[in-house]
Image (cartoon, rainbow, N blue to C red):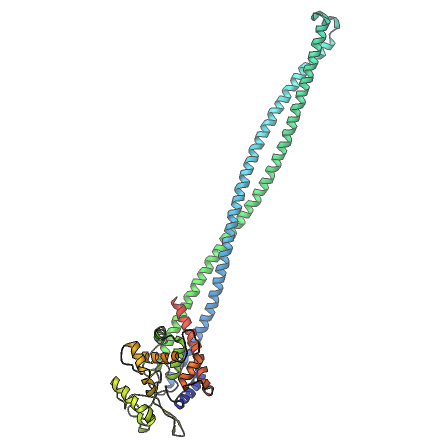
Length: 452
């Protein structure tokens, strides 16, 4: 960890720049070299383009949600319409079968009526013949009737038989007429049912036609909604690809120290998170705040720096000189030209101590307490200037101070990382780290969504 004075100076520089460039990236809190005007212009243009693309992605997301909602509603509607189609088809089939039955019954009834009417006509003819015979009998003289028959009794008996026959025929005729009347009534009922079924079939056919039209119309709309959804999803993917490319290009433009894209930094953070158990967004935020993900590892102790910026002058002798020499020796580095952070200066006078090393900005004495833990994970000598080792060391410390993969205790862990305790006088550090972590989490969510 770097000294509070050094961190305070870095934070002030960070805030000043962050106020000018509130984009997805955090500019270095202390730069080893000035950014040229042309480079600054390029960065500004990229930031503006990135902001425009992110707004476009948000708009596409709204359109995608709308298309997905419309697709869901249309799918449900079409399913309902098809159920109704099946139902009306069954009803039409039932009505058609009923109509066919009624028409068959009606034809049978009409045939029965014709047959009974023929019997009525035949019966009428027979009765007519009998009536003519009786009329002739009545006109004969009694004597002639007596002469024809053996006696008067047989004559009278014959007359009575004719009357009985006439009565029987008349009774039969009346029965036939009643049968015909009943059949006519039955015929009217069948004709009424036939008319009602024809009307019902016409109505059902119209319903079926409307349902067919609705299904076809909404199927076209569903296909269009799916096409819009597919197109919008493709546009979102393309925009995210452009945004990812811009983030990478923005990092490359700095051209200071080790180059690393956000995607690469996230992959390292996720790898470390899986092993140690600290949320990647928090880890990225801490290393962004400390060194802008390894781009600003300090502007002291470089080749050609004056004596007052060399490690012997800027580090606390009793605490960090020995550890610094041990670390550089183990790694085969020149202690006189390996960059470390500078202490804060006011009116040209040094305030506090510097000497923080690498992307995670551990002071030498603190690093000595973590190098073994890092080496146990990587299986090699721990190097505070190696971006992966820096991520691991920072994660181990944050985890030891209470941070976990679920996002718990992150403010306290960040404060301890900065000042060794939760001293609210320095809460600006914890607040800033959590704000950066929130923005990184959004980037991470976008990246993971794009990978799905």
